[in-house]
Length: 309
Image (cartoon, rainbow, N blue to C red):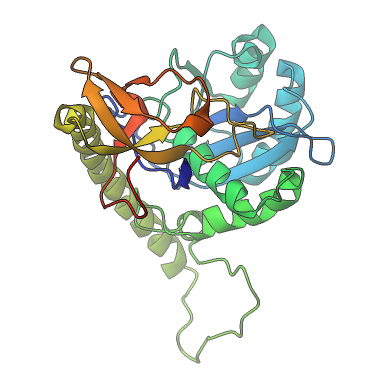
């Protein structure tokens, strides 16, 4: 019988960065999550990510917006907080290719950057941010998956308050110069420990330079990691245990976005070619064709309990 697994990193192609922002909310990436089960009349989540600080905003939407509506949403949810960006990265959805959206970006003084393949290697991390968001919602939403809209404020607070692996700091700390408390706490200020008006801006700029250096180092490490993942398929052999991605499987959940990303582990029955494998699948998966590309597999590290697959 299949079991659920946390979201490991599948075998993936190499990656290279496309932007190098120098300050918060200079370069912005955005995308949509959905279609999701109805939650307070909403079916989509608009994800907006600052590529410098990794601060994100999550906005529930009833439907995919037009270019005009998206411009209005940007003013209300992003511009009012962070001002004008230099660049906005998106996929080639109709909202982002529309003439109106292009004119709107001209008014902001922002460059439009359209990605042909909205992939973590080219979008600066918005897809990985959405993966983290969906993982949070999977953990806390009810079985009907109809309360996710109520969870978005908590997901946003948790995401922006957590230390990001790319920068080594929490997005809140990078943008505001201090941590933001998710829960009430007593002040810890002591006499003589405050900073002068001159020291505070210098501290912020020094912190930004540290972030720039951390992002550059992370981009190098990510490329090496992605290249290594791409070659991991060569290490799979007959009898190995692997997790199977649910990306192309119909498991009966109301929403695939909130469903488990991997199931298994299953045995490799045989290697078809350099990148394709046949698995031994349980009967409860129905008539699923057992041959899969290596990008849908993740090697299982451990042993099975209670018998063989």
